[in-house]
Length: 608
Image (tube, rainbow, N blue to C red; front, side, top):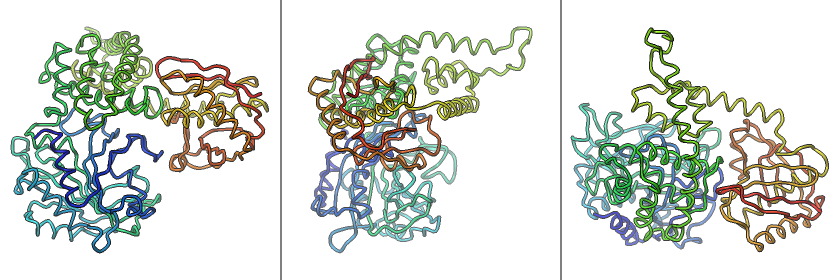
């Protein structure tokens, strides 16, 4: 069964069950405490918590969608059979259980089995399930245990697990709606298994049992202190890993051998002298990361050293590094990008319109990174060789071949070699990668950065004169105005402020038009004329994120921060100082707007 047919069957099935089919939301969530949309339920959180009424918004409590998602937690695991950065999630929801208008555990379990067995043809005797065994004062899910048996799942194919495996949420992990879950696994057969007699779902030694569908019985709210309380309503929140399901239906080892990836991998093979089967892990990583990059760039994200831009740069540089290692041909990425767009353009047509931009962004990142990667390879080899003993045994302290952590961190910082890439090279050369040493070096670097900030970081201000403070406050208005005029992909990337002018660097890929510059100026001057109050609160970093405060250079912040707010217009983490009222600023005027390279612009401005 082709992947597009699986999507169509799922949405058609739930439409037939009275569900409203919802479009996928953006990968860039409105919730600023998380970088990306990582689950289908995120756009429905206000309704799942009872804050908003789904009947008023959607006309029904029953919803279904195919949601594009992006997760960063398991980037280092990409290349195995189950992990991806970008992926799709099929989901169905029943928001609020009321007579005749909502369903809960019984309905969710019946729908799941009916879709898998009757619609897709999966075998009932190969289905296993897991339930919540009870933990943290939340009771065992006895009802689900009984319901699965009533629906034909044998008792010995139902396993119990705790919070780690069978309690889902919340998104962001600190607070939000959550609940016990019941997961459906599919037995792929002994050839994927191990020799353990108790092999089953969540087996640590094999991938015989593929987790396909997670049914979350959402009836709790997790508080910031880690306690749980009942939500005012019960919800069903489910999610199918689309790539995994397609792999099972097409009888493949993983999604990389399905129609979701195979055209991309075939085009990669044509660009290299290697074959997929010979370098399976590397080809999978490149295919996954390139696919993820296509979707991130299509949503306006550009490579940078901050937040989402940093994730994109990390993906691209790992792809570029592996392409250099395998001696890919020039412009190797063009055809795989086109194949990716061809696979998804009927489902997400917005990526087709961004094809030229996507290719250009990746081309520029490769050009930029290629200038340093050659020298990086030379230093990498030198750092290994200089640690080795000579033929007489001198230097025996380094008898064990290893890339030491401080050397690895130096290469990472100076030449941009991703740690994952260095691990791969070490494996191929038969040497060890000093994981603990690398971690210590990275933590030491963070401590030095924080100490330096505490001592001298003043938001780019050369002094604390009255005029400099005014211009510093104006940068807050400027950032928010740019985000409102150009989009939320805009983040501050640096600033320098003197008593005469401000210089402000930000993420954006195109030259601002005269009309856009005027709109930015007009919006800022409007907020100045409104004489908005400027205030601040001290809080911990996680609380600041939850409140939607925008941060810059996050690794430099300590646990406690100041959040400066300009009425309801701007909210930023900042050290200060600032004026007390925007009316003190005068008139804002942009004097110059220019490029600083790929995805980075600079504005110079004054107050008159």
